[in-house]
Amino acid sequence: MNRLISALIAVAVVLAFLAAPAVADWYVGDGHKMHFPQLPDPYGWDVEISSYNNQHELADDWKCSSSGPVGDIHFWYSVNNDADTRIDYVVASIYSDDRTGVYSQPGDLLWSQTFNDFSVIYNYGSGRQGFADPQQPETWTSGADNHDWYHQINITEIDDPFIQEVDTIYWLGLYVWWEGTQEPVGWKTSKSPLFEDTAVYRTGTDGNWIPLDETNGAPYPLDLAFVITPEPGTFVLLAMAGISALFFVWRKRRAA
Image (cartoon, rainbow, N blue to C red; front, side, top):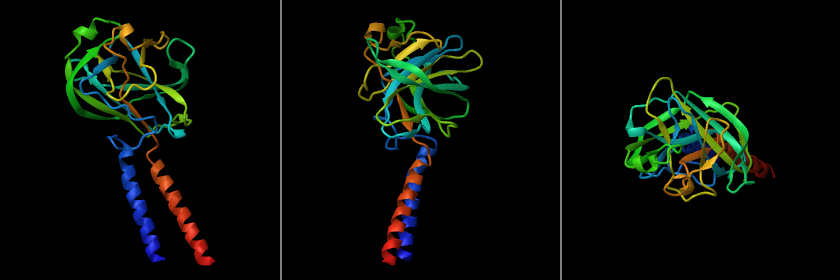
């Protein structure tokens, strides 16, 4: 009996250790709750998601791979000309999938929260990248070779998280803002294979969604870099449930 209990404790410790990275930052190989993590392209683009005087919202779709709460949201961004810009707030929204038009786009707003408490990994990676404002098509040319560094924002411990359903497609919308006059911030494009339709953008919160592809000046159809993950404690809770079940089976066998 002592050996079994020791083994179960060891398993719990290992699983808790493996789940620990989900508490804050996200790295390649950590868990996720979407079709696949859309990883940043070190030599791609950053598409503006706000400046001090003009709000842009970008959105990209994902397919839920496991029902339950959206515990954490992780995404990558850069700043125009690698300027030292501060982000005070991030607005994250989740929309349904609307496929009634020529291309899929966000539908009904299902959930939205504003966050001023998030962690940032500065200089997460580097590569010569472009910066574009989708409202100004000329920036797809003039903004090439604009900056080198990109960073990761981690939104964790979300109160009242959105509950997603397996095999359902949703859209994640993001924009950021800050107090004062600073250089604009862009959501980093992904090097992962394009999932479903291209990402979209709009100006304000009630404008029409426009695809980020060649028809609107982009060099190619673009997806954006982000990862949806479960609640930090999910893996540990599942592990403990499994351990409890094993212990129950062992006790029944002992009693037989």
